[in-house]
Picture 1 (cartoon, rainbow, N blue to C red):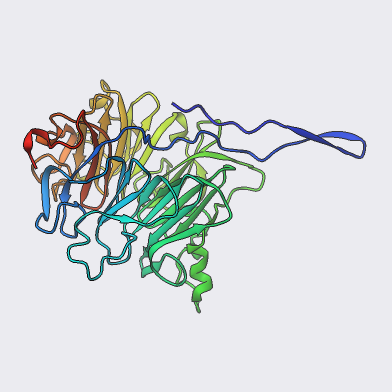
Picture 2: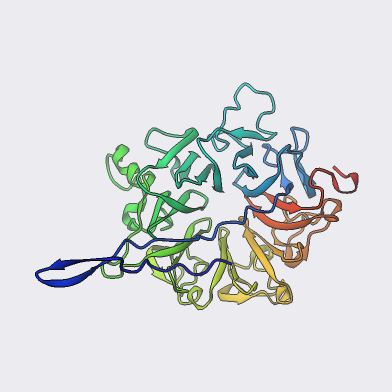
Length: 437
C-alpha cells in the first residue's frame, strides 16, 4: 500500500539582502496510487450488448450471467464507458469495443463488418499505465506522463466535441505542458492530477464537476455569441479554482458521473465539487457545488477508492470497509429494501466481515470485490448488468455466481450505463471455466 506523499523538503538557499532564505522546490507527487497492473487476467462481461459493448460478437445482445470475452492478450485493467469497453493489456496496449458513433473507440470501424462488436487495438505512441472512460469518451495515461483522449463530451445542449474542432475519433494529446500522474473520468468530464499536485479539468461544467466555472458561466449557451472561445474554456484543461491563500496540493483524485473528489496531500481532507442533489458528495445541501469545498464527511476516513454513479457514491476505506451515500432507489446503496436516502456516509454492514479491495458504481448499480476474489453486486438489474441471472433490482450486496467464476477470482470491476466488466485471474487464464462460453 503506497504511503502518503509529502512535499519535497528545502534543498537549496539564497541570500536576499544579507539574509539567508530557504528556497523550496515545487511540491512533487510520488508513488501515486494507480490500479495494480501486476495481475494478468481475463475479462468477463454481463448486461446489455446491443452496440457491441460486451465484445461477444454481433449475435449476443444481452447477458444476465457473466460471460468470457475471448481475447488473445492477457489483461491488467478494464473500464466500462457508457456504451463501450476498454481493456489494458499486459504490454501496455489498449483494446476497445462497443459504440463508436462519436469516436469513443479511438479507432476506425466504418466499413469494417462487425468491427465494433469485437476487440480492436487503439494506436498510441507509448505504453499505457491507466485508462478511464465516460459516456462517449476515453482517456489514456502513458508512462511518460502524456495523456491522450478521444470521443466527445456532451451537455444538456447536445454534443460539445472533444476540442473546439469537434469530436476526436482518434487519440488526441489533450495536455502538452504538464506531466500527469493520474486521470479520472465522469460521464462527460476528465480530471487530471499533475506531478506537482495540481488538478486540471475539462468537459461539461453544468453540474459544477469542473470546479472552476461559476454557475452562471456553466451553460455554454448562456451568453450571446457562444463561438469557439466560450466552449473552449470548457474543453481546454485548466486548473480548478482554489482560494488564493489555501496553497493546496493534492495526491489523489476520483470522479463520479457528475462530480469530482480530490484528496489533499499528506492529509485525509477531501475536497468535492459537482452534483449534490442527494448529498452524494458529502455536503449538507442539495444543490450543485461549483468550486472545491471540503467535505467533513469524506474527510473522516482514509480512502483507497471512491466511485460515483448518477446519484450515489461508494467509498472504500484503507481498512477495506465500504460506505455508501446518496439516493436509495433500485437498491443502489446496498442498505436494504426499506432504507432511506443516505445523507451521510453509511457503512454497508453486510460487507463488514469481508476485506474489500475494489468498488465500482454504474449509473444505478454498485459492486464490490473481496480480497478472496468474490464479486458482489446490488442495485438496478434491468438489463442483467448485475450478472445475477435475472433482471430484478437487488437491495443488498449479493454474490455473483456462474460457471465462468467457479475457478476464477475477481480482482476489479467497472460498470457503465447498462453493462458491467470484470477482471478475473486464474491459474490458466486461457481456458474457459468448465468449458462454458
